[in-house]
Image 1 (cartoon, protein in one colour):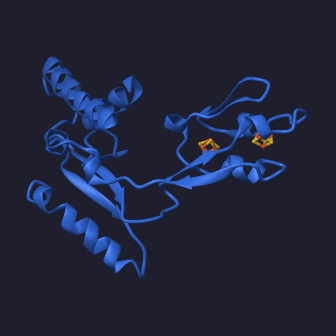
Image 2 (spheres, helix red, strand yellow):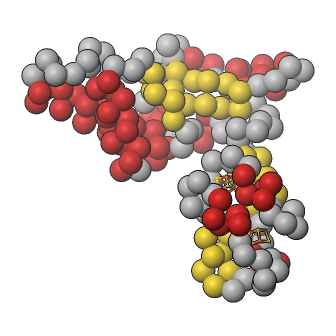
Length: 177
Ligand code: SF4
Ligand code: SF4
């Protein structure tokens, strides 16, 4: 969260129009704090050494059904061969795969962003991708009020799922840019 907060502050000061973050209550809160930091720093610097004119939009991504961008890796470490040299652990770009002992550990969901690299490298195809759905119901009304824009991941042939999600966004749509 501190990294997200710091990055959002820097992007805001750099003058971006929109910051797209995970649809996660804690991440949205950290991003909002990053905006507040940017405002404070801009004031401190006297508005001349940065490009902060207006705050960027804060955007989250939702999916109306299964989507490759909304998945996490999973495996049971207890079933890994004891002689495996764990290429999954070495390859994971976010250190989301960690072993705490023989047959213990696995994927830390909060660190996995579903890139799929570990799935491809496992010699016994032991790792699976588990889909998840990011939805507006994950947020309280107060949490939703902090969001300016939404990106909906959909696909051809999913009119019904899209319409359903769009309908559920109704009370919130008037505040979106
Ligand atoms: S899917 Fe990517 S981020 Fe997730 S555990 Fe595998 S390598 Fe790491
Ligand atoms: S590469 Fe596959 S078998 Fe080896 S430790 Fe990772 S998940 Fe287990």
